[in-house]
Length: 124
Image (cartoon, rainbow, N blue to C red; front, side):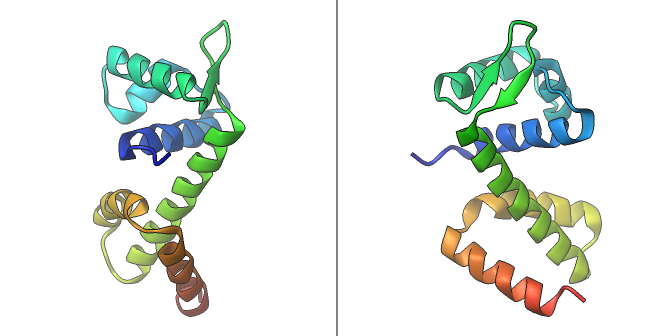
């Protein structure tokens, strides 16, 4: 099943928050994404129901193996695209916004080829 972009973005946010803070709660995701707490609560319920996240009794969110795989994949794409665009001369703010859109659009095959090209030609 292909996830919606918004679900992928939530999983990526959870991963990034875990990396930066060491823990993640719904309020952290709401603050990070700029969304209301009720909207985030609904999204977290859906991600939990679909087996992408787990929540403990204190409300701390963790990624399941399936959720971790999706989050890592999206985050890898985001880092590669934003880095590539910046190296090509795109200003950082625009590069980050564009990377967010690009990370969802490509097939695994196309991403793999772009990644190989970037690693060979743009990583000086």
